[in-house]
Length: 281
Image (tube, rainbow, N blue to C red; front, side):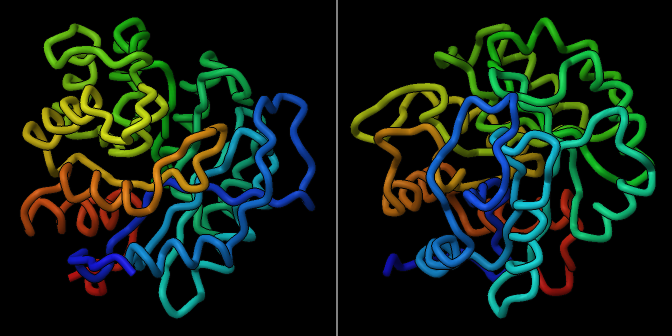
């Protein structure tokens, strides 16, 4: 077992559950093999994680059943509290949003890559609807296009969570205007960035991802209070995913110092996802 110094209440803010019992969406581009709650509990045990955010995968489109079932299982276990990020559109009713909130949903996912179920033009309407429920917009896109969407994102009535270090494909330099656009979002105080899945930006057989790690370092230096961390388990679509040892090492490199680590792993997720701060102290 990997020796961990993660503080109590540490949270994995982005992972997926796959289960062949649930129907595949017509829009899906990825159909990964089953990845179960039981398997993920082993990941939690190895990395010493107490909390988790289950993110609706594009595989299931607008049907959040698999994700919510996982939250129900993980949220009541001895080791973990759980929340969900789900997929809804502008036809989702207020009653359904209420139900999803009661089941642990705290964000609406926008996967703006092939396989996503909700288009860009729906984002303002959905954001307006979810704002009253205290949800945020979670965004995954090619960060190289971020500058073209910046004005619209700055106008959202919700907070914003950006996946996977911005997912610049391929990575850009820290002084590139497209990365500066991400920093502008962070500087609003209403945007968080997930430090996760560097392989979505760059292939690296050594699993060191130095170009992405430079972006991580710039983000953490700029605003550690706006960073989140995640495994992105089970690494859908990857033929050479990092091992748990690799993920552990990257986390240690990215989150240096006890105070920074606690802020990113515990305090920030508590704020974004509504975990009990008393338990995370």
